[in-house]
Amino acid sequence: MKLTILGCYSATPRTFTNPTSQVLEINSHIFLIDCGEGTQVELRRNKIKFSRIKHIFISHLHGDHFFGLVGLVSTFRMLNREAPLHIYGPKGIKEAITLQLKLSNSWTEYPLHFHELTSAESVLVFEDEKVVVHTIPLQHRIYCNGFLFKEKSGDRKLILSKVLNYNIDKSLYRSIKKGKDITLEDGKLISNIELTEDPKPIKSYAFCSDTRYNEAKIPLLQNVTALYHESTFLESHKHLCEFTGHSSAIEAATIAKKAAVGTLILGHYSTRYSNIELFKEEAQTVFDTVEIGDDGKVFEF
Amino acid sequence: MKLTILGCYSATPRTFTNPTSQVLEINSHIFLIDCGEGTQVELRRNKIKFSRIKHIFISHLHGDHFFGLVGLVSTFRMLNREAPLHIYGPKGIKEAITLQLKLSNSWTEYPLHFHELTSAESVLVFEDEKVVVHTIPLQHRIYCNGFLFKEKSGDRKLILSKVLNYNIDKSLYRSIKKGKDITLEDGKLISNIELTEDPKPIKSYAFCSDTRYNEAKIPLLQNVTALYHESTFLESHKHLCEFTGHSSAIEAATIAKKAAVGTLILGHYSTRYSNIELFKEEAQTVFDTVEIGDDGKVFEF
Image (tube, rainbow over all chains, first blue to last red):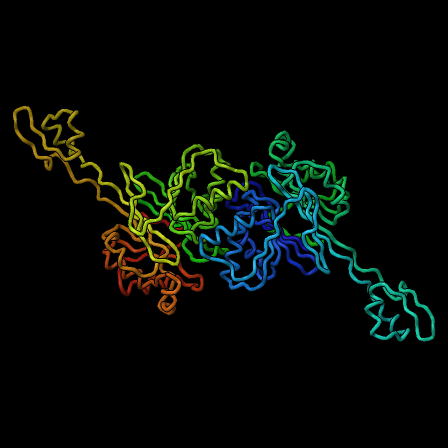
């Protein structure tokens, strides 16, 4: 699992900082999460292949999280994309994008599927044999969801020396990997545990931005491998959190601790701060495993 | 008169090139012309004060000319702008911007005035005591206008030594500057030409992008100080001009020659070319005074 932060600053794009966008590679999927202005340039800069992006998840319709979407959709069109693109985001996102495509007389020739979200509960938004994605309802100034990405449990691993030793027919390998015990031709039962090892551990990633402090989401976040949680403010400005619908670094760390996550990644810093290391310092007073998100930074889990 | 090119490449923003946007300083006005994605960052990079931008002119609603507008409008809001902003552009621009502001629940608190254009003829879009702006109807794949910015003729310049010599009362200076002759107290008539010099020459700038070759606009461009004319293609791809609604470097130069402009500035290069100097070479086979537009380049006239 690999996370590339394309942008993680709040409010407006600036000369050297970008608004929110991330790329999550998980079980051979490439998911784009949020798409602030300039995201398509950051994708190029970080050498993410446009054609590998098939699903885009938008948390909410504030500009710093979605003003780059229409440009990316248009660029895909100009590059003669044929593969379908799925966009998951709040109700209204379809109208915003399609109106602009209509005005520019530039309909995409590739299929563009919008999956509009309205539920206040966590809902399943994507699932295949490898990955499952649910929304994480967040509390912000407007309707907003985080997203929880989870690998599905893989097959058990064959211990090849054992299956060869028992001279087990290859046609049975698939069911052994699924956990089945085997009866040999002489009637002897071989327990699956003797023939296989545990599959690789399931990894998961939770994206929570933008949100004020809110414990309701903790059950969804329990034990995730990595949690990106917004931390717009330091303690010196914590009085701004409630009104603006944002969190402080300490609040993000408190959520991480209560959910017992593996690693907490901070981001969505207010552009008033010049030294973002202070966010880590404050968060670590509550929770140990804290990483500072920053534009262009890559995390592998 | 000062022109700053923020971006002048066609199609999509890339790591080192920007879509169309320019800043024209003329007679103490600052006009923003077109606003591709990333324009607000280029304004910062070029140290253009956001608060001095009061009028934005949008040629057409293709993304590379207007996808940066909603972000700029939103950033003005976040910076607590109070001054009115006037936006001139094709019908539909108001709906595109206001829909996105509505979805993000982020109405501007400053007055936002849209001046939607529908005419196929040149129309007056802005006028004050210093500058006048008309549209230049262009022929592109969708409704598109260039813009012609003209200084107004200033007052004539007093020759101070002469007016002092005749002992002319100060209350008459204003009318002398406007061109009036003067009758002295002894009845002697002093011709204005003896008391004043010509005002500084009127400067003008024409922005023509995007457009296919089209001589109908030449009368509007006659003798302008500087003409920015798109030149998307070199001769090697001139067969693409008609279909795409664009011009070649030689076509841009032909317009410049027929309109007898002062300087031709080229831009809107297709991103297929790595050496944009070739555009100048080809244009100069037709017209001498050619400049290569490029991102960050500043022209003073």
